[in-house]
Amino acid sequence: MSRLITRRRLITGLGYTTIAGAFGGLAVSSDFRDLVLKGGETLAYNTHRLVGRDALVREYSEAEMSPDFRTNGNTSGSTDEWKAAQASGFADWKLKVSGLVAQPGQFGLEALKSMPSRTQITRHDCVEGWSAIGKWTGVPLSALLDRVRPNPNAKYVVFRCADRFGLSLYYESIDMVDAYHPQTILAYGMNDQDLPVGHGAPIRLRVERQLGYKNAKYIMEIELVESLAGIGGGKGGFWEDRGYEWYAGI
Ligand SMILES: Nc1nc2c(c(=O)[nH]1)N[C@H]1C(S)=C(S)[C@@H](COP(=O)(O)O)O[C@H]1N2
Ligand SMILES: [Mo]
Image 1 (cartoon, rainbow, N blue to C red):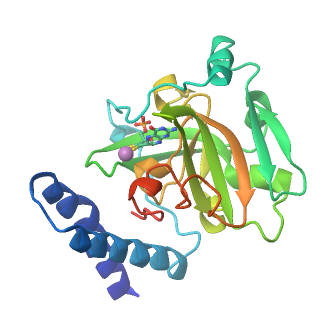
Image 2: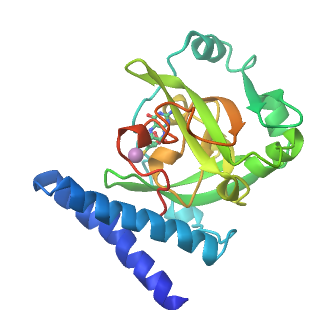
């Protein structure tokens, strides 16, 4: 088991830090890049499931929190629906939950806040090479799923967001193992405040065993599906459809 972990660390480090950095300045064949990144993807995925479906990532102390947690990607929602909700302080915003569930529903912020909550101080790692430690408060996704009761054939949770790149709204997906992981939360708070607009208000995903781009901001709808084939370009996320790996394990 320890050899597995060591290899995982090695390859993860190579895949996301050294190699990613080297790509900035070097022309490396895309076949080689795919080999390294896909190798890391498979290994991290298998390790997270073999070593422990519920293995927790490290949590930090208040003293270790980053004084500045930068924003990245879009820093605001852009749909009319999101803008109208923001204008009302998200008082009339509702998260829709649909797809392969026994009890589809809509949940306002107060409803989400009345469910069990979890606060965690974790490190966010962006594929572009920066990290920051922040405190997140939200409802465990497992608690919300318990309310809507996924059908046995539900295999992925898809997140649909309110911000666009070009014509496409941002979207992401995770599997049921990460969906029920204890540190996977829909965060409505950051660093003891309401989640700021730049960081994804009113709610964003924290899926702590994966890289930054999996942590969808500006979530409007959650859909449970059996296959990712019908979502966007079929690879399970906005960046995945543009070449990033779907399982972005850290
Ligand atoms: N909806 C949405 N979610 C998103 C993004 C985005 O542009 N739109 N960017 C991703 C990327 S690449 C990162 S690193 C983090 C940035 O989160 P932050 O703005 O809170 O730092 O959000 C991720 N989730
Ligand atoms: Mo990122």
